[in-house]
Amino acid sequence: MLIPPLPPHPSEPTPGHAGERRSLISRKMTAPEVVSHLIAHKCKDITGIIDLPTFDDNPISHGGFSDVYRGRLLDVARSQVAVKALRLSSLNPDPEHLKHAAQELHTWSKCRHPNIVPLLGLTVFRGRIGMVSPWMSKGALPHYLESTPDADRHDICTQICSGVSYLHQIGVIHGDIKGGNVVVSEEGVPALTDFGNSLLTDATVKLTQRAGQTSGPALTLRWSAPELIAGTSRPTRASDIYALGMTILEVISGEWPYPEKSDATVMFLVSIKKEPPELPRAIPRNYANMTELWRLLLCCWAYEPGDRPHATEITQTMKDIRISIPIGRKTTLRDAIKQLELHGCKDATSLLNLSTFKASPVIGGFNDIHIGALTSGTRVALKRRRIEEPAEITERNEIKRIAHEIYVLSKCDHTNVLPLIGFAVYHDHLAMVSPWFLRGSLMEYLRHNQASANRASLMSQAASGVAYLHERNIVHGNIKGSNILITNNHTVKLAGFGSATQDSYTLQFTATTSNPGITIRWTAPERFQGLTGPTTQADIYSLGMTILV
Image 1 (cartoon, one colour):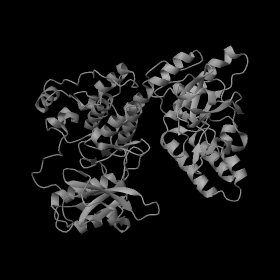
Image 2 (cartoon, one colour):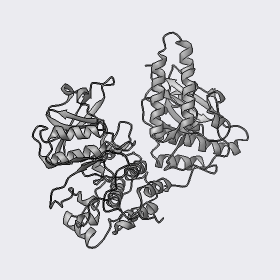
Image 3 (cartoon, helix red, strand yellow):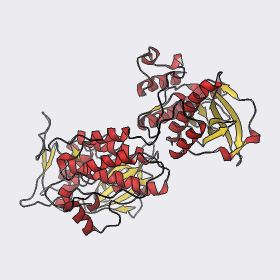
Image 4 (cartoon, helix red, strand yellow):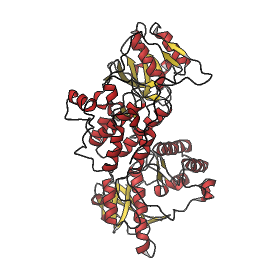
C-alpha cells in the first residue's frame, strides 16, 4: 500500500492569524515577565489551586532540565496531577532554559486532543516555574506494555498516530516522538507528552535567537530521521513521521529500534547506508497483518523527507490494516473462539462451575441469560444470543453477534462499564461471561428504592461511562435503563453492547443485513427515521431519555 508523500515543508514559520496580537520573548526577560506574557496568551496560572502539602519532597522522575512531582489540586475532585518543574529558580533563572520552557508551555497550551496529555496550566512550584498536567496512572508506554502483555498494540499505535495527525493539523511539530514520551491513563488511553523539543509554526508568542545560535534540540538517536542526525535540518513534520514509524516499531517489538546495534552503528546505518531496521523476529500474537504494516513503516522511514506520508494517511492506513479473516455468517464456533483468543479475549469455559447454572434462562430481548458461579464462587451471568428456528440458518449469525459484543466489551476498562470476565462455550453455544449483580437493572433498582435512590449520582456515573466509551471511539447504540446494571455498592455499570460499534477494529466482522431492534422511546429521531446508524450523538439523545426516566 503506497502512501502519498507530504507536500513541501515551509522553511519559515507561517504568519499568525489575522488580528492576533504577537509577543516576543527574549533572553533578557525576567521569569515574572515571561509568565506574564504566557498568561496573556491563554496559558492559565493555577498556582492558587495547587495543594502543596500533597506533593512529595523528592521528584518521581527527572528530565534534562526539569523534575516531575506528583500531588493533588484543591478542586472538588481532588484531582491527582503531575508538575513538571524547571530545575532553576523563578527568581534567578537561566535565560536560555527559561526561554525554552516558555516555548514548551506556549506550544503545549494549544493542544486539545484525547491522545495528547492536556496542559492544565502553569504554576510557581517551590520557587520554580512548573507545568501542570493530569497524572497518568499507568505510566510511560514501555512500562505499560511490559506490565500489560495483552494490551491491544495495534489500537495503541493507531491512537498515537491520531495524536500526531492532530498536532500536524494545528501546526505543531512534536520533535521527540518515542515510546518514552507517550503515557497511558487509568483507562488505557495513550497520550503524547513532553513538548520540550516542539515547534509551533503559527505562534503568537515568538522567541528571539542569539546571534550565531544554530544548535537544535537534543536528539533521541534511534528515533531520529537522517536529516536530524546529519544536522542539516531542524525538526519538521517529516522528521516526526520518521520517529512515529520508529515508535510503532517499538510498540510492536517491545524493543528500541536497532536493539542490537551501538549508537555509532545506528548513525552509520541511518545516515550513510540508508538502511532501515530489520523486521522484528518476535511479533505479539495479537498484532496486525505484518506485511501491510511493514510496507507502511518503510514509507515512514524514507530517506528523503518529502517522500514520507502524512500523519493523517498513516492513521487511516493503521485503521485499514486487518489481522485476520473477518468473523461472519460462515464462521464456525471453533474459528470464532480462535479469533477471539488471538485478539486478547479470555476463554473462561474452564472457570465455570456448571452445576450451579439454572436450566431455565432469564429471558430478555434477543438473549438468554443463565445465572451461576465460577469455581471460585463468584456469581456470574452467561449471555448468549437466542437461537430461533431454523437453527442451522440463524446459529452462525448469532455466533457473529455475540462474538462482536464480546470483542467490543473486551476493549473497555472503566468503573462504569460492565467488566468482561471472558467468553465460554455453554451447551455448544458461544456465551459472554460477566459478573452477576443482584440489584439488577437501573429500572428494577429504582422500583425497589424509589425514596432512597441517589438519582443524580446514578446518572452522573452513567454519563461517565458513556464519556469513556466515546473517548475510546465506541458507540453504545442502545442506552436505556434496562441496559444499566447496579452493583451491590450502588455503582452503575453500562451493559447491553449488542448494538455497539467501534471506530477501529483489529478483529473484523462482516456486515450484518439485519440490525438488532431499536427501543423507540430512547431512540434519536435520525435513527428512528433510518437516516443513520448508531452514533455518539444518538447515544447522547438516549442518555438524556434515560436521565429523564
